[in-house]
Length: 166
Image (cartoon, rainbow, N blue to C red):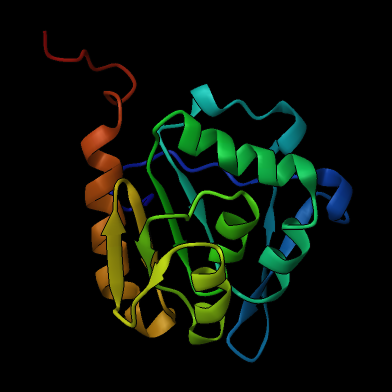
């Protein structure tokens, strides 16, 4: 997203992390740590053009138990803003009760969860359904990244210092 010119902020509930950083999972081992830019308690949906929910097993599983995080995700749907999610990230979408009647994909083990939540699960590298883009796994990143950059750019406001057309 940043390479495409987006301003990206990492939002997370500070109460669920230590030292203001979160740790990424890199397929089979711990990855890099990332500084949280905005505490969830201070994040406002109106400040963002869209929301990306990363995957992995650990972070989505922890976040879906946090009511404030779930409410934040639901608020993006209520505002009609684009959302992207990959791998196990759709657990947050299920918890927010926003997948009913949609078609999406995910890591294969979420297929039953997604169907039980009232959605249609498909085994495709990337799926877009009404401003929701989902993908299965890191092997699908090339297609997923292109799709979310295109979607977010299509709804984003003008870059800082630029004026919108009439």
